[in-house]
Length: 627
Image 1 (spheres, helix red, strand yellow):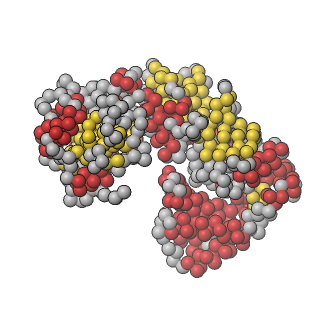
Image 2 (tube, rainbow, N blue to C red):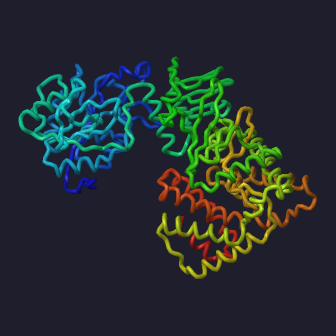
Image 3 (spheres, rainbow, N blue to C red):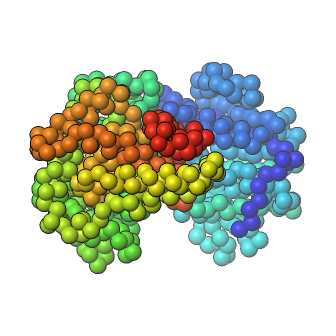
C-alpha cells in the first residue's frame, strides 16, 4: 500500500460533528453529552481535537445542538477556546445540513469531517494526503466491519452507493468510519436546511464527480454509540496503555475498595464503605457505597449492566476472554466453567520456556510458594490451564492509592514469599536439575549490559558513550563483581506487575519461568527499586531491614554485610536490564506503553551510578547523557 501523507503546503479545514442526541447511550447522555464522555480522564472531544491539532488546520469548526450549553462551557475553559468556531443548530440540521450551515468556513479549503463519537487510530494525515493526490470531490475512509458494512465499493475503489439489500452485483461492502475529506465544491450538492450527507454523495456521483474511498481496515475503530461500545473503547485504551486501572486524581476512596479486572474511576467519583469493583467504569460524579459492582457502568444515580465479553472486546475463537498486559508473547484467556473461571495459557510451539514453567510451578507449589495451581497441561500443544488469580496486580493496586499501612503490609507479605524462595526452596534445589543448570553467571550479566546498550542506549536514545572501550571494561568489572556473590534461587523479574493480589490482600507470584540461581540481591533490587512504583525512602529502608531479618531468622549463617555489598552491583545490573527491556518491547515488539517507565528507570540508573561513580565513571557519564 502506498504511504501517502499530508504535505506541508496542503492546507485543510476540520469540522467535527457533535450535535447529536446520543440516544443509544442513554442514560449516560442524560448527564453528559456524548462528545464529552470521558476516556481515562479526557473527554472524547479533547482526544479528537488533540489529534486534529497535529494536522495544523487553518480552522476548526464544531456543530452543537444537544446540551450545547455544556459543550460551550467546556470549550470556553479548554485550551481550544480560541482555536474553534462553534455552529449552534436549532433545530438540528443532520450530517449534511451541518456542513452547509458552516459554508463560510468550509467553502475556503479542502476540509476534513470527523464524527465526534469515533475513537480510532486511523492516520488522518494519510487520508488527507491520499485525497489530495486523487482528484476526488470527496474521499471516504472505509473499513471492513461486518456489523456495519453497507457501503458499496466498485472495482475502481470508488463509492457506488448504499446497499439496500443483500444483492449488490458483486461489489465490495465496507463500512463508513464517520471520517471523510471533501472539496468545497461538494457543498453545492447540499440543500439549505436539514439534510443527510449520504444524499449529497448520491447527487455528486450522479453529476459525474468521483467519490473515492480509502480502505483503512486493520486498525482500531469504535463507534461509542452504545454503553457496551463505550466501555469496550475504555478497556481498549487501558490495554493500549498497558494498564488495568485508571483513577482520576479527584476520585476518592479507591484505596479502601476491593478491586479486580478493569476499573476506571473518573472525575469526582466517591467510593465509600466496603465496596467491591470488578470490570467497573464509574463516570464523573458517580458514588458507590456498600455493595458489589461487576461488569457495569456507574453513573450519578444509575447503573448500566454489561456483558463481560463485550467490555473486553478481545476473545479467542472459542469465545474465551483475552486477559493480561505486559511484555509476554504468551496469550492468556479467562475460561468460564459454570460459575467458576480458569485461565488458559497458550504458548507458541517454539516457546522454550513452557516445560520449564510447568516444572517450576510444580516445584514451587510443593514447597508452599504461592503460585497459580495447575489444573491441566497439554505439552504437545504447549497449553496449560491454571487457577484464576484475577486481574489485580500489585502494580495496579498501588495505582488505587491504598493507605500507607496497607501498602507496607503487602510489601512485607511479598518479602515473606521471597525469603521463602531464597532459603527453604533453595535448600531443595537438587530436586530441580533444570534449575541448577541455569546460573546467573558472568555471561548472563554481560548479556544484560549488551541488551541495555543495543536496545536502549543505541536503539531508543541513539547515544554513544564518550569512551566505548572504557565503558565495556566497566561492564566487564561489574559482571565480575555481580557474579562473585553467593547465590540462591531468584525469581529474576520480581517487579510489581508479576505479583497478583487476590481476595483478602493475598499476594501470588507469576511469570517466574525465568528463575535462576543468582545473588538474592537481584530480586530485592527488582522489587524495592522498581521503576513501576517508587516507595518512600524510609519505607524502602524498613522493608530492606525486614527482608534481612527474615533471612537471618532462617539461617544464622546469612551474611548481612556481604548481602548489602551485593545490592549496588545488582541494582546497576537490574536497572540496565529494565531499560533494555523497555527499548526492546517498545521498538521491536511494538508495545509503546513501556516507554512511559523510562524516566523513572533512568532516574534510578543515574542515582545508582552516582553512588558508584568512582568505580564506574563512564557508566555515570553515560547515565547523565541519557537523562
